[in-house]
Image 1: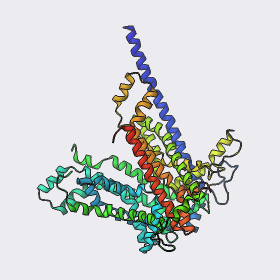
Image 2: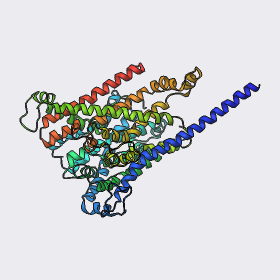
Image 3: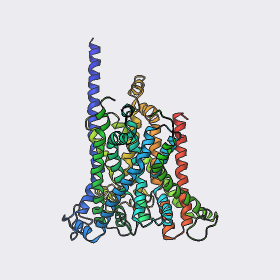
Length: 289
Length: 284
């Protein structure tokens, strides 16, 4: 008896020790991650706030004086405002087009058993998998031939191309998740195609649609290769401006400001999507189905 | 799934999405291939020739670029895996604080590649915080050159930082499919931590490991932006050389050859890894 008790105690202690070890490890990983992600972002924020008249140079650990001077400078003397305007008009257009194009395709991929489905699903991934610069360079030859290079509509088409894979994939999973019973019931009650689209498909794919739109939107905001080859110098977006600040005229303070302008909306939007997807609209609305 | 018969309307409905992608990607690949043989050439006359291919393979600088890109692709995929696998393993089981940790890790996923490049450039530049810290700790005597260095460590660092969460997501989903029973059984039969790791976790997560390595390799191999801001001045990456050949020197045909090489390498690596995956999992 005593031996068993001893043994049990040993197990309890072992389990406790293991739990404590896991907690310690979690704390350690969190600390490492805070440094790993936080330090680069913190440094950039700091750099963007360095006062233009008090440069931050080698021996100083912290900048002498902080101010919004760099932000003022960037907005006053660079093309950032125009680039912001281009980026944020381009993205909604591309999102809208990719939504219109992907809706019928996602419907077929999500709800129909057709021969060659795997093949079509692979095709959908091509814009993500294919090396961006190759596609950009030689698509620009095609665009040149059709007068689409250095052209706003051409850029919208290019950004639509990059947004389509995300849109189609997200919408396909949404269409797959619609229970067949609901559609059968609607048909039984005499719903025609239009009513089915309006009252079943669109409301039910809405969460996926929002997620897909945000993915396509951020892809368009981030898109560099195609914009750089097809759009510059006529059109500048935020990434191409950042690239020019990082390239031959490397100005760290200006680049910090542009980097933050580009980064902050992205992080907010994608975290919003994440929370949104967790609430799983479909299963919530249909109970146990 | 609907049980209706296949109708041609279904294929018609695929056209806006799949057709759009096929048209754009297909035409660009088609032009790349024809132009590499001098057909449909923009500059000069259109005539079938393999001179451009010969020229590229006799050009030492181009070969340097190809080798350099291969090296960066390989190092980035292995490096990201080495960082991501332990974290994925740790996050497999839930626990307090781990959700917070998981969302913290995900942040670089939402940061555009160019911004990520800039964030890391700030740290590893000549008087950056990493060099200063190492100097202050007395580990090194002189600042290290990590940015635009000859070897390309700067590029690898950026790729690892940016793509760690992406690889982590793939690995996590593949580790999550391992049943706890398997591990309990192994432990019961006397397996230690080491053999559980190498005889259960690694083999069972192998498909995920291979997929993440393929995707990382493709990303890093064909990359233009990061290589151009953080890579060495010589050799330029293959995508950088291709773009310079095309737009600076106006030798589109030669650039097309480099483009075909990038596409073929991407396809070859994908094929190689998928064969490896078949071999490892024993499935066809």
